[in-house]
Amino acid sequence: MRDAIFSGIYHERPVSVRHSLTPSALRVCATVPRCTGAGRYFKLQIAELQIAELPFAGGHSLQRFGMICRHGHKGEVSVGQQAHRTARRRRLGAALRQLREAAGVTTVGAAGAIHGGVSKISRIETGRHCITRLELDTLLGLYGVEEERIRGWLIALASEGRKKTWWRKHSEILGEGFKEGLALESEAARIAAYQTQVVPGLLQTRPYATAVMSGALMPLTDEELEFHVDFRMARQDLLQRDMHPQYLCIMTEGVIRQQVGGPKVMAAQLRHLVASSRPPDLTIQVVPFSQSAFICTGGAFTLYSYPDPLDFDVARISHLDGELFLEEDEVTARYQRVLDALRASALPVEQSIKLMASVAHELEQQ
Image (tube, rainbow, N blue to C red; front, side, top):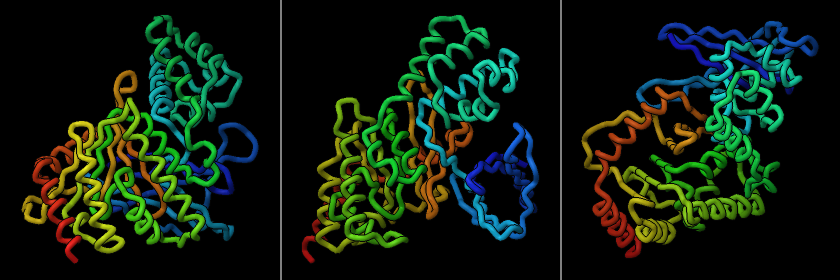
């Protein structure tokens, strides 16, 4: 039996759900904060529980919950953390929690020291709230952190977390899960993407991206389509900057053979992939149809890795309703093992390039 904490929105107030998932039963207890009274809760009565299963690496699965309350209002509890969290905020929050627990300080005590509520400490420790320099200094003093190296590291994490992002001017248009993904990819030292349907967005040509986005579940207007395609092209600057992340793309052969946008668009996309390949900075490998070994992946995913002082990984899964981010060590380690297995099952880089060039040539002859 494994427990997990999920968060969502009900009447614009946070909902917490703890579930215990066993092969035979799923128990859900949802609580909604009262309008007044810190730390006091009442039970949310549920008339109907809708569950959609999301598979992920290693053959396990998580659930996405949709709730219809007896009041007649519909709310939803999402598996993924929807608040905008950067990699640095995640790492800073985790470190502050470890320091607080090591010092034997309760969340109530920490909250009192910075003249805030317990919920604020919780948001700081989960990376969902920026911390000011004064608040950080106060907490470090409370936790007895005197070593300059540790203090300097934490202060650096906090200051980096307040940097403005290049997409900030579009913040109101972009979904929270998508913005969290942007923050993660912009800070990563290594990005590994596994795709079973389309070429990853960071490697798409404009015509291919236009064809992909034209198939969105919610139809886009011409203006919206142009905005999102332009934005995807702007994201690709990440791979051209001086301090760019190492990028690994693993795709199934079906991705390079499906004629998204038609033969000409797909041929140009494949030529772009061939020209973009420059290992180890940008590595592209294809898992061929002839590969007989089956590797359970649960579907497409992206793994972000961060160097010191962050030193952790985040796995990202995109689904129809948004994004799911997994950062527990044992979970990301599972994704890393799956990634290693996929690399071993894929064609070597040189053969992958030859296959893509061959398919592009076939399409160009049509």
